[in-house]
Amino acid sequence: MPPEKTVDEIINTLHASVASMQYFETLDMICEKVEFNLDEAALLQRIKQLADD
Image (tube, rainbow, N blue to C red; front, top):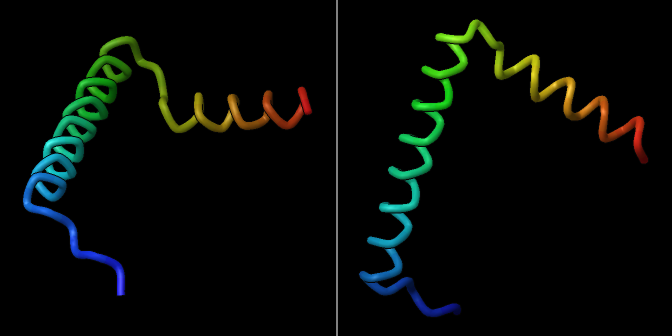
């Protein structure tokens, strides 16, 4: 059985999760201000990746 996570690991994971959420909320707000659709951009990026492969 693998060892359980330490309290520090759990806290670090929580901090990373909160930072990630804040990043995406900020990104979403910026996209809204410049009228840019993040979902469409992600789809276009994926299409570009497939075309480059």
